[in-house]
Amino acid sequence: MGGESAVDNILNLADRMLKKLRLPYRSGDTEVLTSVSIGASIFPTDTPDSSKLLAHAKAAMRQVKKNGGNGFFFYKPFMNERIAERINLENRIKEALEKDEFVPYFQPVVEINSSRIIGMEALVRWKKSEGSLILPRDFIPLAEETGQIIPLGKNILQNACAITKSWIERGFSDLKISVNVSARQFDQKDFGKMVKQVLRETGLPAESLDLEITESVISRDLERTGIMMFELIDAGVSFSIDDFGTGYSSLLSLKMFPISTLKVDQGFVADMTSNPNSSAIVRTTISMAKGLGLKVIAEGVETNQQLELLRRLKCDSYQGFLFSAARPADEFEQLLIDNRRKAA
Ligand code: C2E
Ligand code: MG
Ligand code: MG
Image (cartoon, rainbow, N blue to C red; front, side):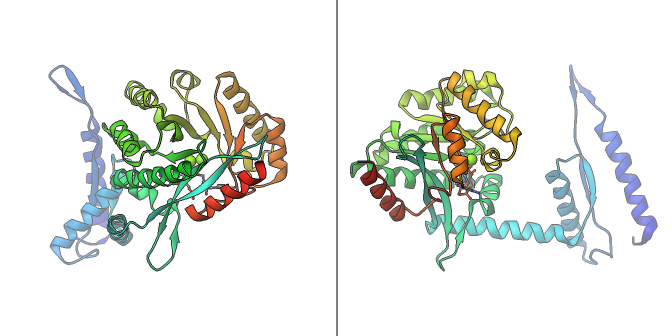
């Protein structure tokens, strides 16, 4: 059915179905709430082919689900293109993992008082065979969605730990490596076991590993999260909260969980020398962290003014382009050698 009235009819029908199906119903003693996602495709406007028509309707339904579910969409051509793009990228990530194209870059963490490199954050880069470099924002979100972050995260952890172990063996024994962990990885039942296995296999001392999680991780399943963290902390691993100030962790959870470092989000650092609200947030975060016995790292430090202000606010350490962006392992090693020579 084509034409205006067909569209109106479908809309009307979908609306009635949604209203009816949304009503709670009883099953025994429990009240059950359902949500409904409806997609529709119109014959022959969208396609004259009956099997495609169904696939189009399904694509529209998936789009509803992606937007949180409980609603209705008509099929639009971009819906299939997006799915095709996604599947394409998903396959390319799989291949890249097999070809070992994900490499950690390292950004130094610098102690403000001594200008000494005390550690580094592993930041993943997708290095394609033809030489191009892809940044995390272009593949981490999809890898998180598809679950590929689980093998990918393990791969990054293995590489970062193995390289750090080799630096420790060369005399940089006090270095700490920070590795980003996404919520999806943390939700894996055997996450703790996996981390300990990687430490055993690479020979990196657990005390040299720091795991960065975001506030969203500690604000969810408190009990499970706590058990997992204590298991790793017992082994010697430490935890940092990344992008602190952008999420919703309660102050109570900061007290409850065995966190050792807060990383002040770069958004606050960026305008802290011109925006009194940002500088107030940075100042408060630093003093709260100190009060709780935590260390503070400021992220995204780009100017000397920012560094001076952080020094005055008694921030412990920083990362940022002012000192160095993330670099490949060999370049980072050179930076480390030069830095330690100066400090000696
Ligand atoms: P993040 O963990 O908060 O990392 C900090 C980001 O800020 C990095 O971007 C870093 O290159 C960038 N940055 C460092 N200094 C400066 C500066 O002075 N100015 C500005 N404007 N930016 C600076 P990158 O490497 O693109 O990573 C982005 C995000 O992707 C990371 O944010 C992290 O959430 C995620 N990510 C990176 N590597 C991994 C990984 O191995 N696993 C997981 N799960 N996520 C990762
Ligand atoms: Mg991080
Ligand atoms: Mg961050």
